[in-house]
Amino acid sequence: MKLFRFLKDKWFYISLIIMLLIIIGVLEYTFSSLDKFTRHGEEFEVPNMVGMSYDEAVEKYQDEFSFILLDSIYVKDFPEGAVYQQNPASGAKVKQGRNIYIIRTTVAPEIIEMPNLRNLSLRQALVRLNMAGLKVDKLEYVDYFARNAVVEQKIKNKVIEPKEDVVKGSAITLVVGLGNGTQNTNIPDLIGTQLQDVKGVINNASLNIGTEIFIDNDVAENLYVIRMEPEYSAETMVPLGSTINVWYKSIKNFDFNWYKYEKFRRDSMAEVWRVRKFNADTIKYLVDSFNYILKNRKFSYDSIQRLRDLEMMFLDWEAIRSAKIDTALDDLEFLLDDDYEIDTSFFYDE
Image 1 (spheres, rainbow, N blue to C red):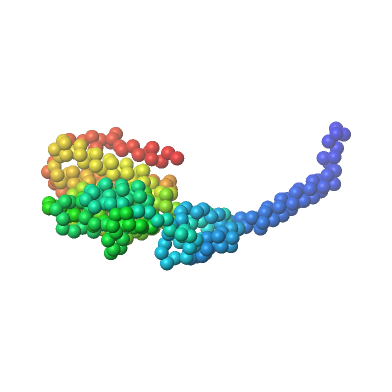
Image 2 (image 1 turned 135 degrees about the horizontal axis):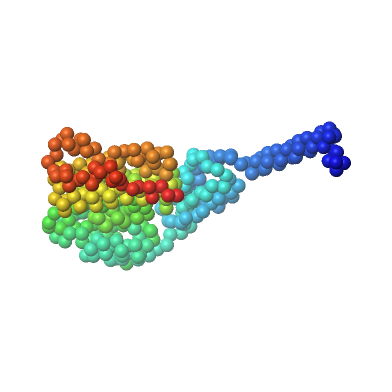
């Protein structure tokens, strides 16, 4: 047909090839120019802005980063209106436009009256401090007949009288009574606790926070306790006022929900076995098995690592038998049944 005669003309194909080459060239040039203009994929090293005027830092680095001011606090002997804390820290490699979270110093401190905390219980004093815009520095325990009753209130080593002017946000040392009975207390289970709540939980347990270690570099709201020292145990007792060291990890890198569920399974199964009067050695083996899982699993969101985690043995029944643990193993047949398995598939639903 004459209509398609041009398909036999070689100049048609030459023209088509030339057009395609031109289109490819234009697209290549466009994307190349776009990458250069936007600096796509380029990483920037976060500078050290601590001590620099906040306004100066924003003006100097606004093309590379986005600034979010989290809080303004008064810090004695620190420049007014300066960057006091930054996240990510200096030296971190980030993409262009990354949010930089800033805490700066105020131009002038806000002055408030010190509340009267004497003779209040520790819990009442903590609530009163929070309402007044103050915070706890540490707990000091002294000989006093009333356990956890506030004996004195200080800033560092100076006694602060009620209604005395103090800077809002100041850290108050509470001098607290040991009481006449036991001077030990249980430690709280902090694993999975958000950073901003940790100190309050520790203080409410009549303890002090020790060293804080940040495994991941992330904003505060994403950081949760991944490890504590001493390790939590329901039987562990420590003296009042002891310190607890904590390690934080980002919720983006650790599946705390999965971790908490494994702990729930451990505790609930152990309780069921106690009610059914299983031998103490068998219950201990159950708990130890779960503790091994909790300690060695990565609890990662990565699908490959999750499969590796699931390869861990739940319980080694041959080890139980070889150890000749005195228990009614017949009562545990439901766990030995080939059809029995612990369903964890829902953990991996995205």
